[in-house]
Image (tube, rainbow, N blue to C red; front, top):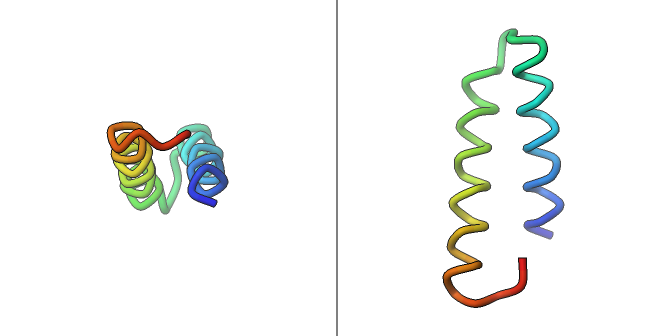
Length: 48
């Protein structure tokens, strides 16, 4: 489930970069959170 959320956030982040409009800051913040969650899972030894 977290992988799906991370992929969705990546897509939204790319859309934010392309449009560079309105919710860009929020999308970047969510992307950082997704990357941190994935890193924590990798450090804990779970499959990404």
